[in-house]
Length: 486
Ligand code: XUL
Image 1 (cartoon, rainbow, N blue to C red):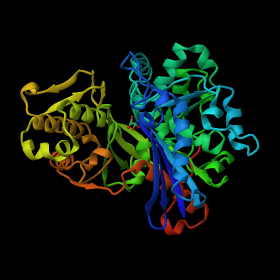
Image 2 (cartoon, protein in one colour):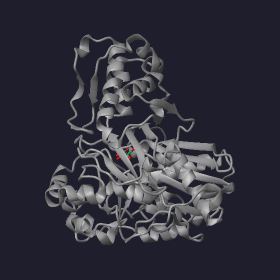
Image 3 (tube, rainbow, N blue to C red):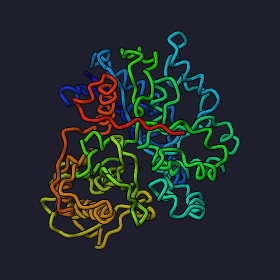
């Protein structure tokens, strides 16, 4: 049984084929927005904007990347062998579709009138040409309004306080800034449910893992919170898709051009972090995961609902049932890349050499190139507690990594103490970073052979869906109950 996991992330899209019997990936393909789709003007995954708080992407680029990654996959794997599809998207980002969206989906679902490409299918169907992504922090006013109205109840109901990048405040800002375009919006999707909708040629549900990143979902009932939605806009509820995990629909005929079999089941897509939780095998309590990507995230499965008393962390749905905790640090890999460019060194030095030279220096520096979210801190550049300019290259590298990991330790104590931390994402290749994590957290650090943990999680969710529908549940453990809401 082969399943496909698709990860639509900040900087690109990955497609991974998973052999469920062997429990491993057998093929993969990727597309990088900056390198492969430069015509969309998003070298790091977002459009340049004079306002550093505004981070938006072109959703058509995500669709074009889906076409491209499936074509690439087809050139190296017999895609007709794939039996089910699952996947994920970068969290919080939102796509605004108008009245033509339904026809666009119908085109993908019809073998007769299939469009030439996904961007062609989407032509004229966007109510808003841009999609705000998780890096956006331009919604201070909306966060303040939600705080004033709901206070702690927001955290108790949705798992997070009002947060700038979360979709609810983003929708509220759009409704205020462009009421006409908001009125023309028929459907609002997350990145995950948008990609899943294209695949099934119908509106896909928003899953509980990703839906929890909106400030709109009541986690106890898994339904949209009518009061919060109504406060954001009385017109909002009708624009949201259903909430639901499990099967989203069947693969649309359009995708036959990539050798895939139309009709195979597609699981509801989730957020990249909930997908990674599944992909690294940490969807049962006991193990924490550190994902070192564009953002650095720290998360773990959580059996009982508990929120961060300091208000920086979040609770999301765990696609395997129950909840997961998460803390997200915006200055992750892009910040490390900036420091590497400042020092002018290669990965050998950044990942290991610097730590051999200055590992015990005890210095700390915090890289605030982007406005930080955990904790909230303005984009001030490097903040060091020593003379940065007089420091050696090795001290610069080591102090920044130490600063990042110490901050992570401090801000994740509410989640609990862990004996084992599984490290994933590009930067997990660095021995220096792994050793720093082990000493700061006092934990055993495990790396995984799964570099694409989110895509892997999507593929695993697809394989569970398939196994469930084939009634072999007893061989793989219980499937989470299907949860659907408004
Ligand atoms: C999580 C978050 C990021 C994005 C992109 O809250 O904002 O981790 O999911 O990876």
